[in-house]
Image 1 (tube, rainbow, N blue to C red):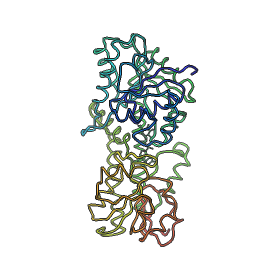
Image 2 (image 1 turned 60 degrees about the vertical axis):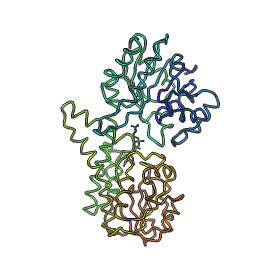
Image 3 (image 1 turned 120 degrees about the horizontal axis):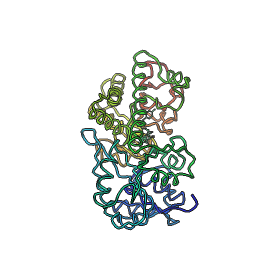
Image 4 (image 1 turned 180 degrees about the horizontal axis):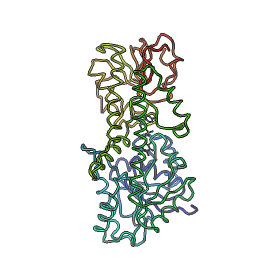
Amino acid sequence: MKDGLNISVIGGTGYVGLTAAACLAYKGHMVCCVDIDPEKVQLANQGLSAFYENDLEKILKHVASERRLMATLDYKGPIKDSSIVFLCAGTPSRKDGDIDLSQVREATRSIARALKTKKDYFVLVIKSTVMPGTTESVIIPLLERISGKRAGKDFGVCVNPEFLREGSAVKDFLFPKEQGIVIGELDEKSGDWLSKLYQGFDAGIFRTTINTAEMIKYARNAYLAKDISFANEIANICQRCNIDFLEVKKGLEMDSRIGKGRFINAGIGFGGSCFPKDVRALARKAEKVGIKPRILRATLEINDYQPKTFLSLVRQTIGNLKGVKVAVLGLAFKSGTDDLRESRSIPIVLGLLAEGAVLHVFDSKAGGRAKSIFGNKVHYSGTAKEALISADACIITTESAEFADPKLYDHMRGNFIFDGRRVLNCKRLNRRFIYAAIGFPAGDKI
Ligand code: UGA
């Protein structure tokens, strides 16, 4: 697009909001992040982010220096001038598995109040992950009631789900070819308006209804999560049959209907702010509409069980864990992020502590954040080597490339390595080690 647009991003200092805002500014638009958190607003104005994401601060600094991105607590000014307003408020899980819409409702009310005095047509784009039906039955009625304006006449509405992966979110936003762009539109004009914004992106655009776009987001995440649980179930069976799941995986990937790059890495299961929450919410939705969500429930059940299976493997291999020094490498729910939400490392660390193990934990990005979860129950190491030096055993919980170096483990005092993500090629390890992993034949020579 030649001339940049004026864009507001509500919830603009959160994970999805700030990534979208920075990338859109990088593409040449004038972007204003609106948020209710003064500290994060101040950080964004300095080109900084409250969370770690690859490349994000680099482009934030760049666009802030060119004055194409600013952040504010005020809704009115930015919305008045914007032709596109993104809604990126968070939708966390409630205890019963449903999503908590309070942030979305609050942001919608603030947008609606700002709309009262807005004269020009604009399109509201929902990026928050919301259950099918939410935009039509909650967001639009709230907007119309408070603002006195009419959707489809005074403003347009689209649902444009985000397909960003933590750790590669900037790349995913700027180069969405692999994921494609989904636009659920209230009417043709809304869809045309948003499609223009994505014209310069090298990716297919699929235009559909608002409810369908909302469902696509859930269906994708549920599909991927189901693949992971499937892989974990097969790996658990492989383990009992003395078969290496990695070899089975190669055989699976040869079939083009399964293919390479699928989410079939077995281990301790999936975590993060998306898969567990989205699968739970979709299962709840299914139950509400009278469908028994068998696959979704099994996906969650297997996932909840994987850390327990992993802990049993540790117990069976080492025996009594009381006083055993264990190095835990990786704490985040995956590598390349400092995000600990629903990380599989949490039940593993707590399980080891309950059995009396002494833990030295290391995560290059999430180490600091972990203090709010584990407090002084564990020792925090500054490097992987430091965690390993006095360790009798080591547990790997993220797929970080750093942990794939077999020489790293030569620093260990003891011999036990438990690989929760199959990052290590055990054949390259010194032969003194006893290597164990889910889906790896017990007692196999390394
Ligand atoms: C996920 C999706 O991959 C994105 O497409 C989606 O946009 C995003 O959720 C979202 O809804 O916002 P993300 O949560 O960042 O992205 O992380 P993933 O790379 O998908 O990994 C999720 C979890 O699954 C991690 O704990 C990872 O270790 C685990 N995983 C992944 C496996 O256990 N096995 C695999 O084969 C792949």
